[in-house]
Length: 377
Image (cartoon, rainbow, N blue to C red; front, side, top):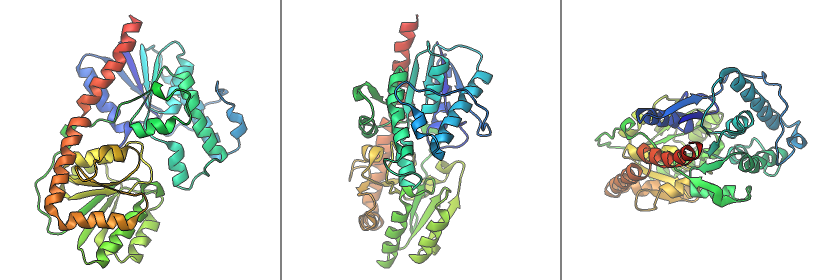
């Protein structure tokens, strides 16, 4: 059986779907499966000219909005690049982005296409202040869920919460399967250490949706209550300057280290104590599983896939979104009670090892693929 894994952009960096799929492909190839990886280079811009038509809605009513126009042009570019680069047929296509899924189904109408939806692009844009809720860009993006449902043969997503979020926009939510992200445990090597001052770490893109303003406000409270700590922030993005200014105003700039982008943060994380990320939305939250495999205690928010990964008080702590006081109390609890902190870290590692291993994902995907293999024979 010949399978194509269709990404959007190339797998250039760790964290998220683009880094996970190559590991999946490698594991399947070791088991004798024939599998290719495809994506569009970031440098491809404005090449596609083919007319775009969807079967469930007329996208042209949203034309003239920059995000919609960019999305449609990228779709055209993906079609152009696929026609230029792919010259063989496949028994099954597994797409990991709406553009990839819809483009592949347009070009290979007789080939089964599976689509894994990994995140909510529209929620991120709203939370990051890029689009208005119920504005034309938002309406366009949520309309794509119904188009995907009508076009592809099977939909998979990464958490139950995101499955039911999508339920608002599709006709049959029970058609959607759930396979959480999986991680190659060999990449994560916990390190025995004893930090005299508690070391917090977060890894994310620096955008409003990740809630780092809440984190810095919580750290300001911690310092005012006399708790020593260091906060390590790995990642970059448009909010960096604003966050640095907030750290200054909270008098915690000396306790906060902004590293910028780092290629392999999983090599760095094991030396710290607590992973904390107060996201405002998260379909899955891969970095929590990665931190758990590094044997860190976890603090997250009661949203999406985070709340499915963290069992409050057992393998981490959950706080309400945007509540910096509650977050500061959770952080304080783990500073003053290292025994509890170590117990949470052990619980997080144990759950991640059992639930989010790459082997588990391979077995679940193998079951999905074999259904199509049987029908193609």
